[in-house]
Length: 146
Image (cartoon, rainbow, N blue to C red; front, side):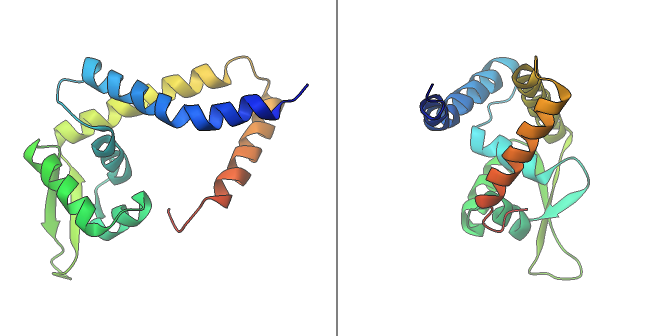
């Protein structure tokens, strides 16, 4: 049996399906209108304190100008707060507001649920092997992102 074809189909179809799944969940389950790119920014900021804009841009693989435009929208939606670093005026940090934290935790629960569905039925040994393989594959596509 050729196992490669189903994996090729999965790799081609999954990103758009995941995006549609996330967008539908955000539209139906979260009270503020938020886009996929915005939730991914929120995810990279994370719940612990603040993060520097240049670090977030690098993690997302976008320019600081692109991130700035998206953060303008997130700030208008009261999801984030930006501040100049008092030690380095060129550096801007961003942190999540309570609304941003709510979006972060909503998205985390969504992805946790999806991960649980994915791993259901696998043995610990199988999951260990799958995890190792996914990490090896993922490292091939690491272009300096954290």
